[in-house]
Length: 408
Image (tube, rainbow, N blue to C red; front, side):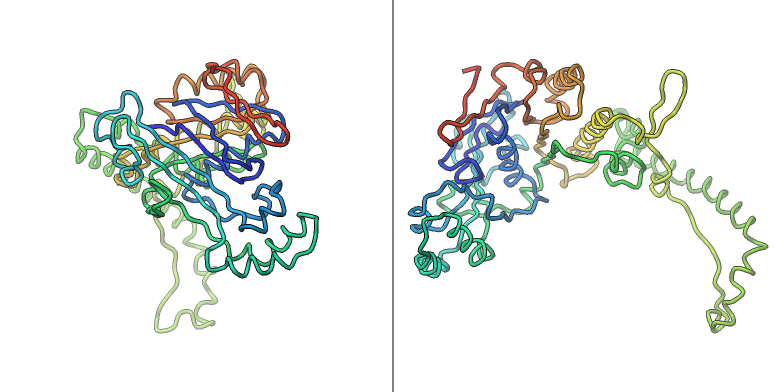
């Protein structure tokens, strides 16, 4: 399964319904500044990112609507994606099961639709027409002002599946089967690389710890669990010796540390405060720091790397997390079925040679690492690393966004 089409209507620079055709695998979207490249990624994010806030602001509407159009009906944003069956997809695949309620065509190759709408509910229509009708101005900004301050808070959003005319609302659990990761051009990756306290690094460590046991096909599941639990117990025993050593070093000073307990009443009914503890392996992740080591053995913390190098490390960790998210053995029914990676302008942080190598890596490993990739770029090094059929060009013709496909 893959996303074959995206249709944007009245969303930012896209006024009239504009269809983009995607290939299975890598899609590189190019175009001049303000041509709508980021808007395409944002549209996918609104559809498939279950953690993304789905409400929009007044500036997300296409502002080229005429006064007559604004008066006739409240502006509405619509984003629709079509998913189709992959060429070699097995019958009754997990993909098909996931989008079973979305189907608009059941014959092979099957087709499914998901639609996002941001709209003013029908019950507000009368008030809308009455208030907008009182605005006497030839400046469209005056009408947008009234929409923003009198009606935007009343707007609703819905995500429909299947034929949008039937208004079948998506189930939240189904949307969680999609893993959408978006790296914006302006990002601070260093905060995600320093220590195991960070959620991204912690997730990756937790998945890959004892990895040789988890991926051993010669072991049954119960044998894997036993070996990992044995390691956890051995670690706790070793950690217990550290706690005991710490208690010994504290013994003389503890009575002085707690000498005020009796005087303040903390020792009420012969209850005496003391210190006790144990260390789990997961609690020590925060002690691990991501470093780089050169061939001479010199070790440097990640925050002393260049920004481009840290971006590559961050993307590597992100791919590792996506592998974790897709693991049915690790997450069971909570695992992701369909993963998407969107990267905005990777050339912003990467040397031209690294841009080419990075795209070649993604293109060659797309089936193993991530199901579908979307990249916006101005770089010829990026476009040189992919097939001509994978390139989508956005351009403006009389202020209207148009789409072209060099491969076609």
